[in-house]
Amino acid sequence: MTHIAYICADQGVPVFGRKGCSIHVQEVLRSFSRHGAQVEVFATHAEGDPPPGLETVRIHRLPTPPQGERAVREQVALATNRDLRAALEREGPFELVYERYSLWSFAGMDYARARGVPGLLEVNAPLIEEQAHYRGLVDRASAEQVAQRVMSAATMLIAVSQEVAAYLERYPAAQGRTQVVANGVNPERFPIGLQPSCPGPPGTFTVGFVGSLKPWHGLPTLVEAFAVLHWRVPKTRLLIVGEGPERESLIADLSARQLLDSTQLTGGVAPSAVPGLLASMDAAVAPYPQLTQFYFSPLKVYEYMAAGLPVVASRLGQLRELIEDGVNGLLCPPGDAMALVGALYQLYCKPEWSVRLGQAARATVLRAHTWDAVVQRILHLACLKPAPESRYVEVQS
Image (cartoon, rainbow, N blue to C red; front, top):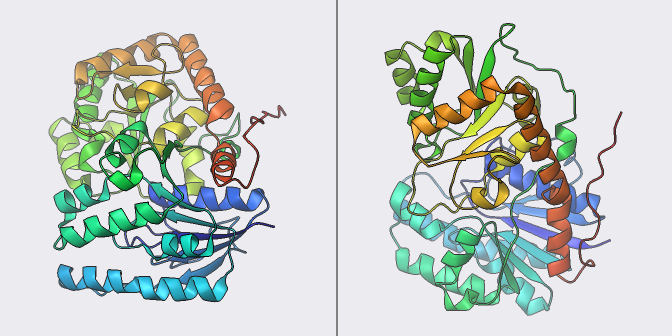
């Protein structure tokens, strides 16, 4: 049985939470276990009860930086490396150290290099730029030094998209040592024929969105597009699943356009509730605006597709590779509300074509984008498993 240390020292990633990053962590942990590994988790933010399937995973909690002055928090986060190294030495030896990159953590990859075992560093975003732009970064120089150190120590870097890989190439320590492994989905969460948990009135066409209501999710474009669609087709509903900082402005926009009565906002929900809500939709959207750096590997889109929904997404980044326009989904220019209206209206007018798009979308993710396939590749890169050969086989009931 392979003994794996999984490290997530990022205070912004609640290991047992509901955020997309949390689901990513949970699904990778489950898949490691399904591959026969014994996994120990070292995490800063691991409060609450483990979700189903993770009850037996051992959790080692790292110190949490105190609330207050940002500079102090950064120094405390740096000091946590001593605690992490001590915990790894105490709980090891490990055959693989797998870490979700965070701003201040380097002890995991240092430990792997010292022990002569694979150390894989998963990079999900340009964190230094994100922190500086959205939240504030006092000691950028130290953050850059940590990035160079952890990348140098890692056996290999795993980027979730080509855009993240291109960003990593700016670091000499990462050049030529990065592999792209996109996100995935657990198809067993989205069985065929799942009953809707939030159905609309009979004959209503439901446009759905799932996400954390962040500024980069394109909600103003979605509302503008739905306003036009609803004017053309009154029997339409907007179903928005999620909570986040844009909720108040979203509600204000819907109210100003007199769309509140035809919109349902669920707020934040448990991951177990998402499949039934997706089954309540006729089409799902990912209306990202034009961004100078679109580095996402959007979990929502993989889940839309696994649920067999026709997806309308912005023609950006990894979405251009995942979705073949008119074959397994529809692509629109980012930020173009009228193009989004046109795509949704086509799906409304051509229900049989809409169904075919959804079926092709599901087939796409089952073929190449399951979490088991992702972890099989990770273990292969760590030289612990042979190259992936099997594909998810749909069992018809």
